[in-house]
Image 1 (cartoon, rainbow, N blue to C red):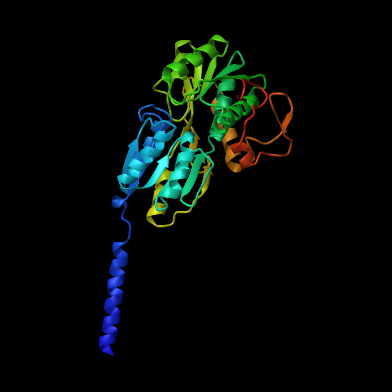
Image 2 (image 1 turned 120 degrees about the horizontal axis):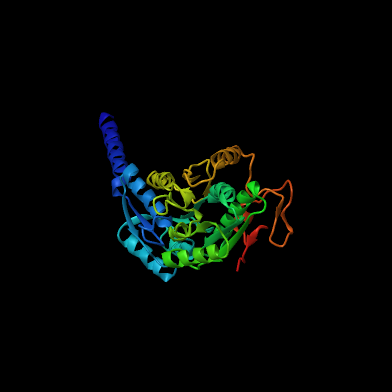
Length: 356
């Protein structure tokens, strides 16, 4: 009997040791990042890369990345290259990567895929984004309190829901303190082109705008404003050093904690495919500190609106909201559902420009 018991205990011990050997160690994990621009852009890609570095620091995992990847078949090959290098987790950080990642997720079921700013999921592919429109609403308050012409220029990349939603939120924030404000939009059809972004801002300034905002990845629009003696709202990161004479604040990203949480869930074998859309309450989005260029009283107005967003008493897309044609788009007492916001393809009243 003692021999049988000893044999059983030995088997249990062997199995336990085998199970321990299978525990994933962070240092054995490789995480891939696909970036749409260069990591030195000072904006969108820079912010994601800061999140990557934070991930390395906090968990000790190995990361690999590829910058300036086109939103076409190229991204599929880059993801395959990362998988060949041992990546078992991949983050792709631009809208145009979505369909290619969806395709690969079925081909590589043991890889955890994460797509930023899209809407598709599979069993092993999540999507993630932040409610940057909350911070954009706050930045609109600052811009509207600064303008003297009541005309704000907005340099924007592509007419997709993410960008349109941000323009609308910015405009609603501006109108909350200055109902006479108009926001004129110029499309650049690029995420990253400093010269083209700057030229678009110059055109808006020539048209009478005295404050420039943007949904672009570089400080080009702000530098145009600085050269013309106008003022600016940045995006993605605190860009105060890039245009110190014009920059007032910016809606910014903090990706690091999300990356740590998700990679840890994969290490713990607790991955669940989800659609994440966190807001200022989560800390993934924020408004950068206001500079001395911001108008008097702006900080107090921002603080009041931010507190209301955080406690739920201010909902950015709550009615009544009128569209460009003067029709009721969101009725009084109603608010937009997430699905409607994620598919937003119309402008609010006060925006000059087309969604096409």
